[in-house]
Image 1 (tube, helix red, strand yellow):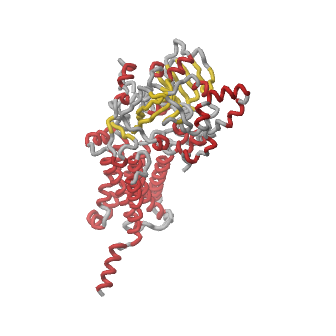
Image 2 (tube, helix red, strand yellow; image 1 turned 135 degrees about the horizontal axis):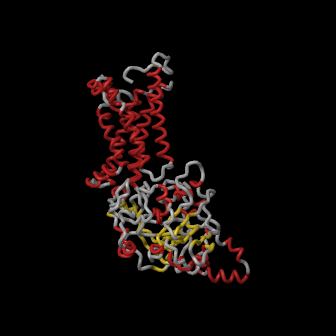
Image 3 (cartoon, chains in turn cyan, blue; image 1 turned 180 degrees about the vertical axis):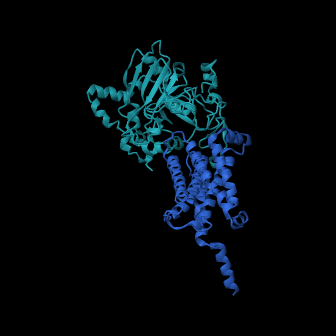
Length: 319
Length: 223
């Protein structure tokens, strides 16, 4: 297995912490000297975990045990790298995440192709410890590092007619093995979407790290969505496009199987997936072989924050 | 004299009447023992129950497929492994039992209402339970006294149900994945389909050209 563990990463590939922490001064100095082009040597093409500083957030879950980094980085659904839970950790090291651009377009007053660094520059990173509930019936507790999606949307300045936000994942068959060949599990690009008010909610974040370090590729590097009150597949990974649109955008899993996956996909123990119950979940790493399932919470336990978004909406019909 | 008798008795117990058959049973149970061991020592990854459950189910399907392949293999001119078919088929049943037990006890914690809801509401579980239910009478009659009691013809007719059970097991596997083009279930479904088609072809050949020279050796009684 080709799982890159931190110990496999040559020390030369990691930006030293003190240099990293002084990166702004360094960039300013470098720019002044006109050596910006030489920077690529310091920020290698393959992104490995590098430390991030993040402020704690009152929106974090603090009373539950966090899932181990080993489990978070080896048990993933990221079909671009294969359908097995171990495939992303096996294959995602091939993905280059520098340079990385995110196109913001559609019904916005400031569309553009933004360099990742430009998106991050104004952001104040926070640690958000969230429950993550997969539609398959398992869950984790993950200490994300990120910032509210609303900040990016506000800077892009949505027009009055914008009602939804559509997201797309990278398509790069040369680095994403399941995007080539005869039998591909999904139609690419992977697409997701939120209603604009959902996207503006303070709980919805764009994550760039977890456990105080930058994301590994299998977790959706360099930038991904995290919407903790919805099933995990809504939290789209490795985002290259964010579009503001008027109508409900098509999303991958609903296009694949509309009977089983809906646009909202809010965590809801009362609405079963046609093939399995959603009433309980298995917390990854809890109890091993003899671990017990735990009850699934409405809106994954975030009801006090988000239930208001759905006042008057039939959650059974709008699953 | 007594020593010789004792050693003969011992070797009968260890090797059985047929050492190859005994070896199949012992080797066949190795994946189960090994996977349980990995589970108990926390080496089955992030979701050990699920991995254990799926591994056992997959081995059940594998043994059923091998058992089904034995007759076509002989009819198409391959070696006759018929005397090991019962052992392989029973291993498939044992794995199905372990798979079901892990689901009932470890996964669902014997929550009977939840299990019942699963069986009646989730088609893939319904189909899986159907496969298991069919295997029970087949396993119970997989011994010489039962063959005698039922008579060879009735026994053979009953055991044709193994095709239904294996097809149901393969469908159960295909139905539980989210994307149709997940390689593993697709491969197993193809194998089972191929075995069924070979069987249909052999049957059609026998019905349509009863006097034609058989492609292979004639079937032996009791096969």
